[in-house]
Amino acid sequence: MRILKLFVGAGGVVAVLAVCLVVMSPLSGFAQTDPAIGTWKFNLAKSKFSPGPPPKSLTLTEEAVGQGIKVTAKGTNAEGQPIDSQFTANFDGKDYPVTGNPISDTITLKRINAYKVEYTLKKAGKVVSTGTRVISKDGKTLTLTAKGVNAKGEKVNNTTVFEKL
Image (cartoon, rainbow, N blue to C red; front, side, top):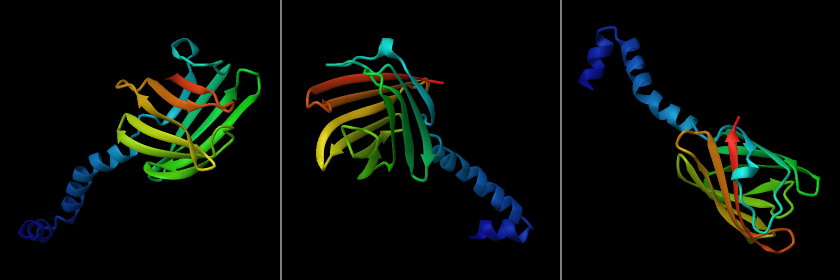
């Protein structure tokens, strides 16, 4: 309190505000800097699909929204049909609605660290897939892993790799 009085008493209100901004800016900047934010293009050569087939094309757009993220997936599936799916979710382990995905209607996200998120997809309350989203340390590669079942009920074990645009 004496230090604060010294700054303010010396006409240093501006100095106190400047100190607060310098001390707090790394914290607020960290919260706003998610390496997944941006647009990601599917890399078929680095991806693995079991049983397959992979999509013909896929682009992910990830945007910061409040304490969470909005993810939009657009592309073309193996049969040539459009892919247009999205969700907005926080990293709090709660279910959030997914639209446009034939295998799931909700997603749950849990942030492990700045580069890794665990997710669970459900359909009508039943878990259909679990996996991770990992961003490379250089921020140029996003890798999704998924284990579960597809729309046909077949077991899947997929690794989908994206490159940042």
